[in-house]
Image 1 (cartoon, rainbow, N blue to C red):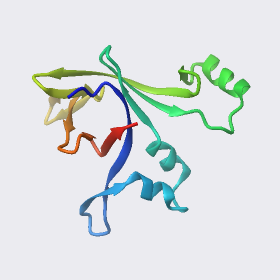
Image 2 (image 1 turned 120 degrees about the vertical axis):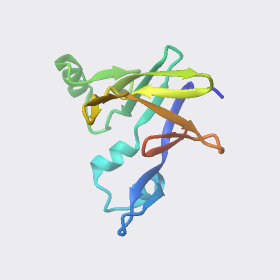
Image 3 (image 1 turned 180 degrees about the vertical axis):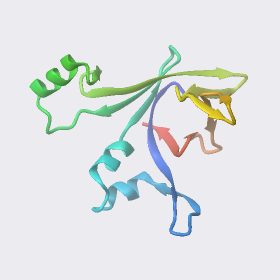
Image 4 (image 1 turned 60 degrees about the vertical axis):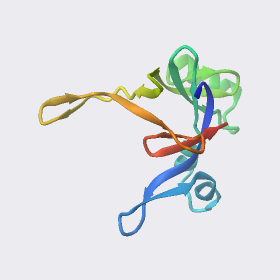
Length: 140
């Protein structure tokens, strides 16, 4: 299976009131009027797996930001443009080896003074979705 292309968040792993893990549809969270706008924005991120081995996480430029404001944000170096209407938030290396997909989180971790790999597995689920940490992704 090829994962090249754009993927959006379909489900988010959350903890219920008893601290049990449960998968919640992003659409249900976005439909809740009490959802924090920054959470809604996070659930709208697109994960683009490029043929060049780069995972680009992008977001739509909010409609309430003018072209002049976008130009200022880009000129300041705060954000980069991705295409005509998206901001590039993050870039990570990804690869496939022996049918297993992984990506480099860039995190520097140690457990008991031992360095832990920053590479995380991208699981391909039976239904064709991808599981990337706490997200299940579907093709956008």
